[in-house]
Amino acid sequence: MSGFDYHRPESLEDAFRLKSEQPDARFIAGGTDVMVRIREGRLRPPALISLSRVQELSGIRHGDEIQIGAMTRVAELLRDEELGRSAPVLALAARTLGGMQIRNLATVGGNLCNASPCADTAPPLLVLDARVVVRSPGSERELPLADFFVAPGETRIGEGEIVSELRFRRPHMRTRATFFKKSRVRMDIAIASLAVRVDMDGKRCVAARLAAGSVAPRPMRLPRAEALLEGRDITAELLDELGTVAAAEVQPMTDVRSTEAYRRHVIGVFARRALAQLSGLEEAR
Amino acid sequence: MTSELRFEVNGEPVQVEVKAGARLIDVLRNALGLLGTKEGCGNGECGACTVLFDGRPVNACLVPAMEAEGAKVTTVEGLVGPGGALGPVQRAFVEKGGIQCGFCSPGMVMATEALLRDRPDPSDAEIRSALVGNLCRCTGYVQIVESVQLAAKLRSENGGSRG
Image 1 (cartoon, rainbow over the protein chains, first blue to last red):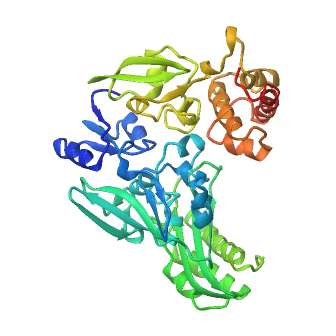
Image 2: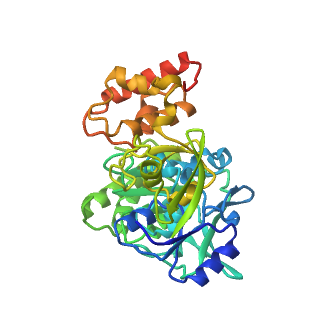
Image 3: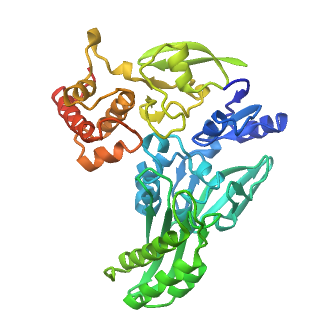
């Protein structure tokens, strides 16, 4: 590798200024993706603008609203005890993302902006109804994470915009959530993954969210599966129906890692298993 | 485009001229001659380049060198005790045969060091989980897990010191 500038601005203002001076420069977060692409010659930026020292992008803030800075390392999702109490589903997913060497580098914002269908932090953040805060010089906008992903590698953020943080309401006491991932070996990219969140009132499901990874061109919510659950008592029959609906609703393809049919099967099993666990019903086998 | 980079390696301050596009592993191996850290895949898959960066294990092949400015980096050379004696983790890998061709060993040793600093007495499941980012194509991992178990024992006998 050779021949480019490397900048480490300490504020968003400086990051935007550098980007306006060198429009072809590339922002770099944890580097676990960008560095590989540069090494393989798939990316040849004239300059890199590192976001690692930008104050506004770091830290996890707790309150009625939980705010996760975009430069939060994935390992930090595991280490933050308060987050482990308020939204443990994030840690369940974070612990499956690569090995510890990757988790100490990779960032939440980078994982999302990379917009891979298999991004491990996406399904849990989707079921938490996370919103993405996007900054550009002099302005800030917010959009639901559910609207953020467009296609593999493609998001709704524009050139020169920076994702600054993820926000979601602190989950209610009645909220329970879990995350399952199927991969060849533990640190590997997901064959299929599923996050499920339910708000229960006794046996009745008051609200439901399901979000899946690696089964569509982008991380996706499963609105039909959610609608099936909301307002219903959770029974063994409903679990079976949920599995069928979820398996039908995803849009997987066959590729080097797995087949369409197997991915549908895994999502169906995960959906049944997740709801059995979250509702307190034993898995109906 | 070169820049001056100042950071700390194995407790010693260093100052090197680096190309802005260099990676941490390039600086360690080429500029500083620390050849213990290996480059395997170059993609963050194999863990052969594992070093401690401000105390935490990372893939040195994925870290832009410029990110090391002001950081404290520990390589496998930094685990060696006074007079060149191997540290407890290194001794454990030798004694248990957690090593064959040796290419993955520095990364395995550094990942083990990181694990044991956090969890001085890890379970087998914790050991296997901590090493998922380190690939070995020779030994089949059984001896490596045994090496980590022994390393934990040796370290505790040493009062947890690295010497």
